[in-house]
Image (tube, rainbow, N blue to C red; front, top):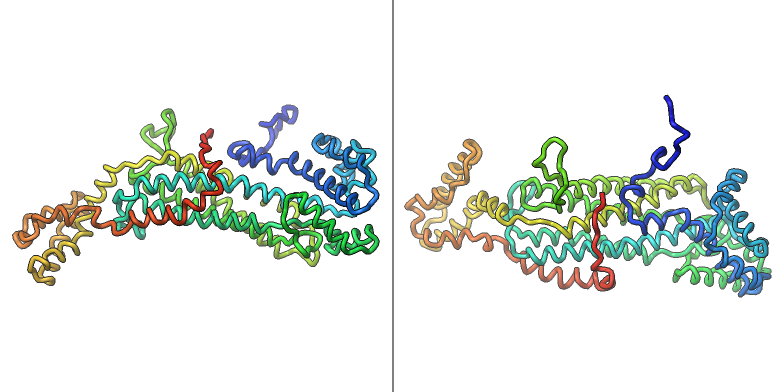
Length: 485
């Protein structure tokens, strides 16, 4: 087949939709080559500074030269070097040394490739969490406002997707919020638990650095501590092989996958409610729901979240399998996999959080539709209340139960066999047996008497669990997200 190789613009080769179509600029940059390789150079600078401070022959001029060239990477030269050397770290050592001839002898002194590779990955994971956490806080904030607004609006509950006892629109939103709050705490813990690999050498023994410092163990420990602090970490892992334990990746990505499951459930609920016409996601004035069916208002934002959430959940298999096959001090079959699974997990999490923020900022509720559905089902649900009212009025519980059973079956037949409305209430009103309670039927059938403590639960949950969780993000909470595609 003819392939137009001569027209190799950006549209002539595969581009990951995660970046080209969906991801935020900040998350796309976080896993970019520029961020990665400038971080490598910063790590070489941290190492040189610490080695100089601890007495090795590193000069101020060398450090200054490295700092002045930290950002100006010749990517073409690096690619050419890698094609010759077949080693990405050494390619960038040579590229950095080319523009820092004075510092060339001490760049990467005593270090192994994983000094820059693994430490950079840990920085990217940390910075990735720092991008995600405020976005998750915004989603929780928007849903909190929604839950508060509709805390006492009765709606049909569903179990097995069959009508069940009433709840409220706000209480249902709190079920979503509770899962998101768990995700928030999990992401915070995963971020805080991250440590630095630090300065550990080729198999984690620090042998090369012990040799550089002529057997001075204290200086080797000081070097590890100083570089760790310069990189912005409180602690380094005390023991590593050539790499940090790949269980760290499991810990990070498992919480992202868990959040993916939460968002899939929330968006599936909204999709089900959209089919009932009770709640809808935002729908733009000129948005088209279907190329053929002009009336359609498809929940495309929620569908996108569900689609990408499945990918996020599936990505967890990668770090699980990678950690299980890290032979002894390490094997390189983790590298290619992690180049994909780590960035894609954070990019996907970023996308679905941004999209969910847009959804929760514009959720539309249709109270009249909700009320109609309640009217359709409530007479069946109110039968126990009717029986209790009759007993209080002097009736016999068993006689009343039989009366209600017969009338309910008749009403159900009208609904299911004839496609009519639920006329149980009319049948009760027409039966002389129920005359003692007819004046109280409106109160007995008031939907707000069927929602229990839902409004009080919403108020307490938001006050005691949700609002305190958002305190650290107050300065970033008001940023809105406009969906472009």
